[in-house]
Image 1 (cartoon, rainbow, N blue to C red):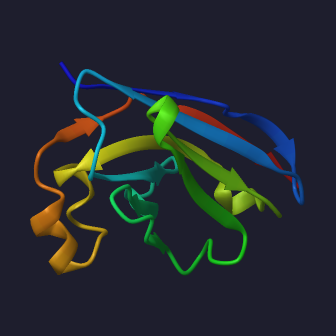
Image 2: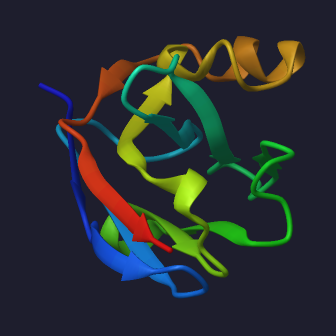
Image 3: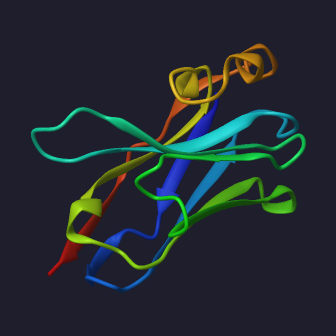
Length: 130
């Protein structure tokens, strides 16, 4: 059974930083798409960042480019989201996702490669105060 467990959320002032972690288990961690969505109160869920673990290619939403960095540690089956220069509008519940769960965010060609799993984490809350 695939499990994605997020950690690292919290409260921070604008301009601060947080690092989210997503630990994956229950499958053979190889060439998958791993990434993050977020959902703020009263807003639709939006893709934030994704990484193809088979080659390390990354993808970002325009709203976080230059501030957020997604990375992987294959030895630990873990994906990270380093969030710098945080803004109040980054306040949201952040969810880790794998493969088909990222279908709406990754490029079409990658959807073919990232088709083995369909998993979501429980979410971790990020609150940024002004």
